[in-house]
Image (cartoon, rainbow, N blue to C red):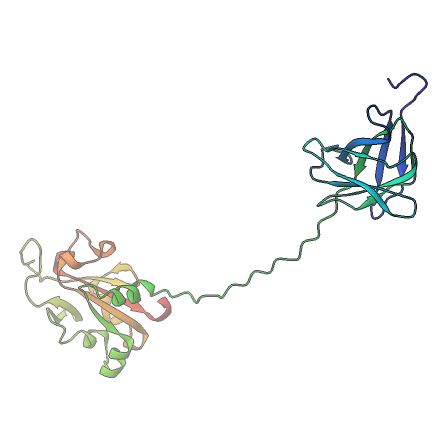
Length: 261
């Protein structure tokens, strides 16, 4: 309830760039004191560190106040009369009211201001595509200089092999053997961790693009299609993904085709 004979009232006031609502209430305290709160329209959240100015009708500033954590402010009008209020705060529309009358008893005001729509520049993300290398494992191990033997595409091309077993002729620990009409690669001496010879020979496990295949499939791949070959004669040096309990003690040969084809 207001003071006797006083009825609080709400007026929608003109605003520059937005809408400023003021609820005028009876004041108490110092003469010509202008007190109030600056709030966000709708949510009515207090606006902290907003600036409220008391302006004469010819736009001269005569007083100003900064709002506290409750959005409250207080300032003193130099004399009774007509003024208008200007409110500004970061993230809110700059707004001015229509004329208000400050009487000797002062004035309490509740100001509601609109948030400023924030326009954001579009975010442009650029990325440099990296070509997928299906033979990355081969190149990584070769760069790390692991204990295996690595044969590159360039070395294969210089040797001009007719079949893939030709590429492996002369590699220490390996020899080419004719087995049931197929050329295969055999360990040239016992390389088994168990130190045994299998009756039919000791054959390295053959992998093609990371998949185990039959030893007789080695010449199914043309030398021109090979990107690189890894040869591991020592079971202790074989990478974990190729260290099979089914015979890797005789060594491992890994063939990588160009682009995995």
